[in-house]
Amino acid sequence: MALTKEQIKTDYPLVTYNYRVDINGVSISFSEVSGLELSFETTTYKESFATGGKVGPNIMYMPGQIQPVNISLKKGLVKGKSIPVFYDWINDIQLNQVDKRDIVVHLLDETGSTVVSWKVIDAFPTKLTAPSFDASSNDVAIESMDLMAFRVTMEEA
Image (cartoon, rainbow, N blue to C red; front, side, top):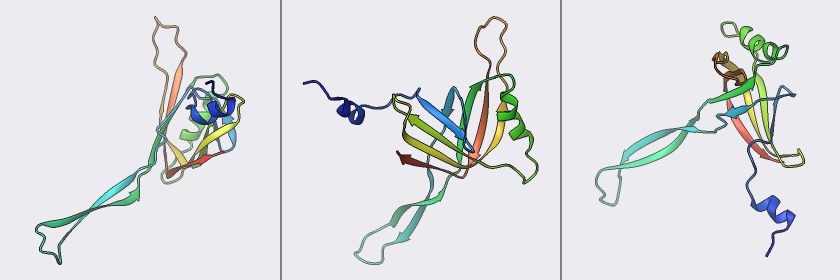
């Protein structure tokens, strides 16, 4: 029995190459985005058993504080666009003064509509890496920027 188009849309996983990245509301092309995760520190709490004749500690594991997010954005170096996107942002950092930006990564369907989005809140650059240079290669010059952020939220469209 053949699946309908609606069943395919709801039952099959989406491909990862169809996405869009917005930084402060401006769409910018990237070849790779990684590190979108949400995690918490864990706390271990031990106490003695008060009743029931049990021996040894009662051990409980609980979520603690949210972990900061570390993401990486990679893109081809483009004359006239790479410096304003990456270099100017990281170059403006001063001690305890940084321009924090929200980043939204949209996973798109075949029509270009957002299906799921991840919002990276209060991101700021921590590292800018220039392309690797190799005289025997025809590869594109890829630059990357590592960012730290407060947290990631996920939303279905």
